[in-house]
Amino acid sequence: MKVRIIIVDDEPLAIKVIESYVDRIGDMEIVATFTDSNKAFSYLHQNKVDLLFLDIQMPALNGFDLLRVLSQKPEIIITTAFREYAVESFELDVLDYLVKPISFERFLKSVQKYFKVASIEMDNKNIAKIQPIEEVEAIFVKENKKMVKLELDKILYIESLKDYVRFHTKGRNIVCKMSMNELEQILPSDRFIRVHRSYIIPFKKIESFSTSNIELSDIKIPIGNTYKLIVMKRLDFLLN
Image (cartoon, rainbow, N blue to C red; front, side):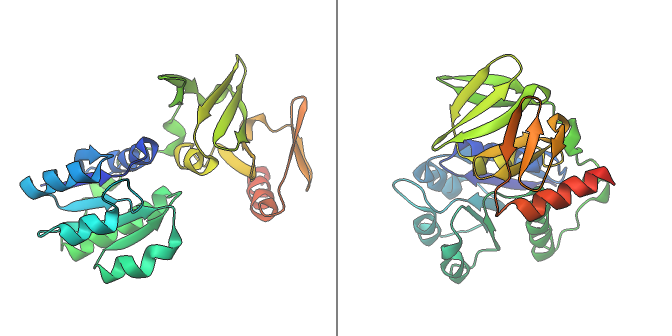
């Protein structure tokens, strides 16, 4: 029998990340998602749920308030961009605390913790069905009021514009409202790397690099000081 999951987060992109991770594990199914914690409370009051992925910072009823008013709680895994609530979360008996951006590896550890607590063995055959990241060929991003399909191979580089990001592509540039941290959760990490607080680039488009910048065709992208070590390690790994 599959683990019944709901996701509560006021950011649709964050929900999509968890959905994509759950899809790669065959022992679990998402029965509902909510961007409104009040609606989530009503659902939990009327339906049996095994595991809840819950954001803390929510409009109206925040994640902690929701936990306090639930009489019958499923296992809880917090998903948040804020580290400072960890102590308070564990005082409310949560199973785990995931800080965004959440990698699939960290997500999987959290899920394994659930199965251990629930005394359920994960089906090894289902774990083997986890889709390789490289199979992802496109993502959908919101441009103006519509979702636009963006093929990953067409991305030249991605630039931060404060609360927005600009996708520089072969055909045209696409601007959408999202953060670089949110974008890092969506893009496959074996194909893209963040090299600066304002830039994410695809490995395939790199033509040359030094310790200070990376050349992509006719543009130079700076390497930020805080990203330099990990960037050099990743590029060295690709060359060897």
